[in-house]
Length: 440
Image 1 (cartoon, one colour):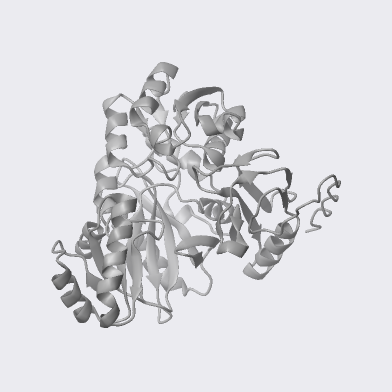
Image 2 (tube, one colour):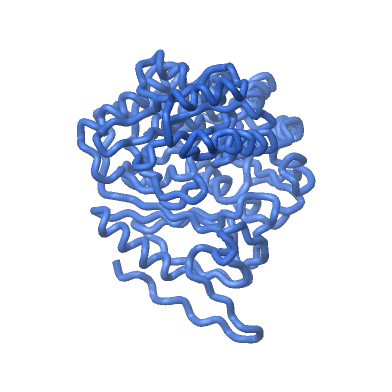
């Protein structure tokens, strides 16, 4: 096992990685930009090294600086968390070339899933069902329009190199296609530097169900149940739960086995998530694979009792998977709510500003809070406005949702705008006491 890590991230996921690493006796090197000089993850780490100015391109995306800090600090491995460089094949290769272990899949696996069109072709070869559509190399507008007519409507235009809802448009009629294509391409070009598109039949009544998979360096793979992430806004997840409700047992097994086939088709190693569109009639279709740990991984941890960051580190260190598929036990139900600094009155746009007042819900075995901020911290303009993830567990979905509502009701945030209940104290007024802890 490693003795020192460089955590190539910030915020709640950096804190999350550090927590597990310390439990395993591993020292952690934190990195920070000018905007994060007083960030919470620095206080938790054993060392903190400055990256550069606030913009991510000059700090958390600066591969050369990260690798230089890793070498200078004596770190042996680099867990990237999610976002930033977590799915960057070039960074994975650079870590290996520098004698560091990239805590993630091989660069070739990242590259294989980096193009949605190439990934779908791979999945078809592996026998994994894919959404009907067009994901070929010909990108002339006339060809795409012709393929749109063949696919039928409604359809979804999606950037091949995309993510986070960028470069996506729903097209209901052929008459809308040209304008939607031009808009999606502009957005994709600005966000990813690549305006190549794929077409998928849009399935409006489908659910977004994803499967957590793990593979080791010895060819073994398994799935750790599934998550339902259908509650979204602008293609961004807001609520996630595990296991997915109202799935037939045979569907759970078929979906899990298809996810493992998808991972093994690219010689995957480590944690990954295979995302499917699930239809009411029980059919499901491969959508994409995320070659990293997901934001919503805590719901899987709560229903399995496993630490997925620990699994990542052990697999990256060359250990075999600690369980077989038959040994994976799922208990109860978990739900995660993402708490963002957003302005609900302005279409939920990100809202920057200081957290003058912050009172969090009581936590315990059934209520977990993953956060990277403290009272007095600033939610800046340079990064994602995620404040925290509130995750709850209970014996049933109904009880878990009730527990989530109670925990959200205990949240008090002043000085910014967010999606939990807000408190904006008048000038000079003492804030009210937080509500009593949940009796559950």
